[in-house]
Structures are given as structure tokens and as C-alpha cells.
Image (cartoon, rainbow, N blue to C red; front, side):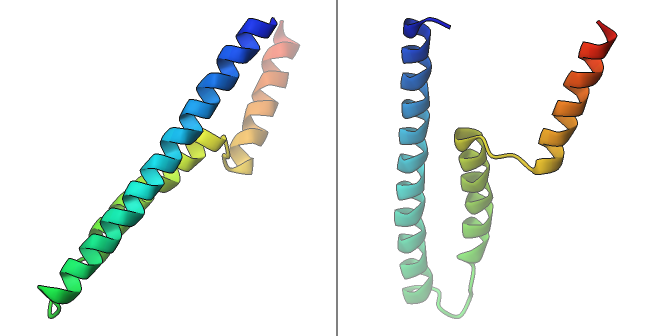
Length: 89
């Protein structure tokens, strides 16, 4: 990989991280607004946890996609599969 390719990959990663942080800030602001609406307008019916849960799952998935964290069993399986396919060649 030459320096130009490294630069392009780094730029894409920075854009992805920036996009995640924007997503996170919008999530926090909207959830705060929904909480205020829920408490002031419809305080007898608690509904704000449903968008919080649904969008929260999306935030976690976005974080995994951007920061590259995946469960250890997936990583272990990938390593075993690479070794297996390499040994067949």
C-alpha cells in the first residue's frame, strides 16, 4: 500500500468517525427533547424508552461499524477460516 492509499484510507476513517459523532450528538439531543415532551405533555404514558431503545441499538451498531469492534468469537472464526483456506492452497 503506497502513501496515497494510506492517506485515502485515513481520510475515509476520519469521515466515518466524524459521521458517528454527529449521529451520537443528534441522538442525544433528540432523546433529550423527546424526554421533555414525554414528561410535560404525556407524563401519564411513558413511551420515550421505545425510540431510545430502537435508536440506541442503531447507535451501537454504528459504533461497531466505525470502530471495528466485533465479538471475539467472530474474530477467532475468521482466523481459523483463513488458516484453513491457506492450508488448502
